[in-house]
Length: 160
Image (cartoon, rainbow, N blue to C red; front, side, top):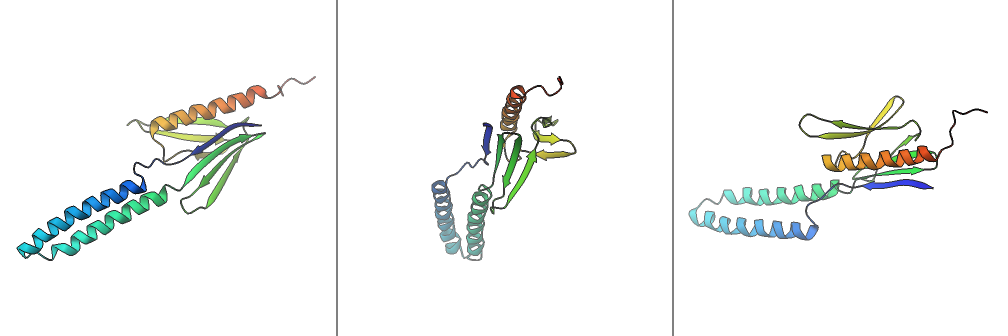
């Protein structure tokens, strides 16, 4: 039975259609400015404007590529598993025993929050790409899932 199944993905403010609009708008402004510089005899500026536009395209492309990474947290049966998938598709799995796993929400002085899963000697960060508010919410969800798991378990300490 699945008690918790979360998929965490990075936030992206633009869709690919919006990026095309931004690049097209910047390109038009650069073209108009480039015509003015060309008329003034300052043609050496044109390659730098083209380079700026190319770097802006590259930055958006890199941002979308990094957005393909995600994390999945699943609590099934007697195992809590965190699967971290990089932007290139490489998977890394972390397994935890739900009875002994703690959720640590570390508040930083400037308002930042770090979320950790800790068990025994190991501590793994969760949702590094999320906002502080989202990390707090995810920490609450994980704690609730672990508490539900623990309440459903028979009491092991009572030996007949």
